[in-house]
Amino acid sequence: MLVTWQFRIRNSLMEAFDPRARWIFSLVFLFSVTMFWDIRFLAVFFGVAALWFASSRVTLRETRRAWTLILFLLFMMVVVNTLITSGGSAGIVTGEGHSVIHLDGRFPVTGWHIHFNLTVERLWFALAQVLRVLGISAVFVVIPYSMDPRL
Image 1 (tube, rainbow, N blue to C red):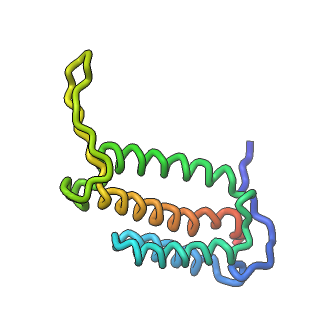
Image 2 (image 1 turned 120 degrees about the vertical axis):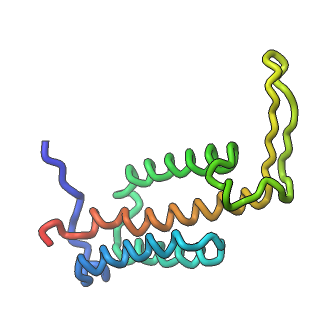
């Protein structure tokens, strides 16, 4: 079976750009957004990505399957890795901070020690991760839907 991208002519601003320039912009955006952890910079990058997505005239309905996969992976990465285990934030966010949820106890049957401390800093780190991944995804998900494969 031959699988093709769902490209159609949309008469958008993005179609006026050379495909190489669009790839270069996407890669520069990717490398730029990974350089920052400050939520203010990431919010600006997210806004640029939203404008980029809107300028392509690709609808969310057309990209629903791609966004479903992206949101599932984002949920797993942020909730499981950052909030629960703090695995992704080990070098960025220290264990100390302003505690939001603090659990300390033992499982009654096994006697395992439970220590969970969700801090404001880890929540901000999780929000930064969400903005970063959604911004990168918005820039790259439009490529197969808005770029003519003949080019």
